[in-house]
Image (cartoon, rainbow, N blue to C red; front, side):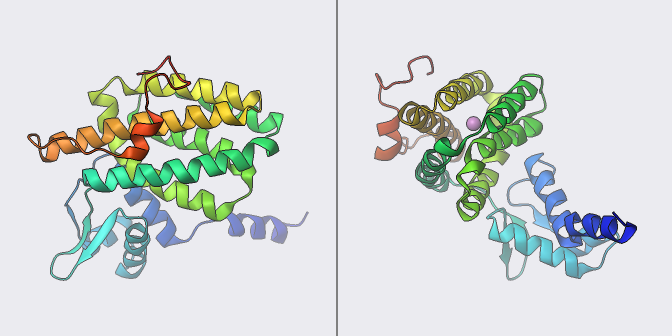
Length: 249
Ligand code: NI
């Protein structure tokens, strides 16, 4: 091993400036430092990061592709807000994509993968910070989906998680969300340990469906309190009473 090899290794893993700025802004949105509808001034962000406006613009374009930021002709970049309809659609897509990823992953899961997922759950138990909790939630799901070896599928799922995760902070504060969710994570891991694809799929469907129902209701009550709640036949199907998972809801 030579110094040049080590340098090459480090440089290969080092992320570009726009990536780093995008990550910081993503976290700022998740933490609620930037809120829905807030303008993101490129010159101010550039000054704070000590960079030119070019990498900032590139970072904002990344966040636009992820659905967190939108560009408006006169007002520039703004933090997007999630409508109840958009949240419902995202969760319907998650149901399809995440069950596919899980079903592809289960036959490939190694003991090391399962141990990693279990360790993430243990860390989650000790976490009180909602943003950290949301990150660990993603890491747990990703640990179970990654063995599917479908990188495009995984990155689509990640993008959907990022859009919904920023509301987890609010959901954790408002609802008895964390206990239910964590209970389902343990059930999901147990089904994966038994390589029981059918049971794992049903638990995951319920997990996404229950979180979706809470999120859509939360957003709808905030936006239009007097309107009847949205309904989704797909979400209702996975939340039918008498379904496999009885310990939740
Ligand atoms: Ni989860």
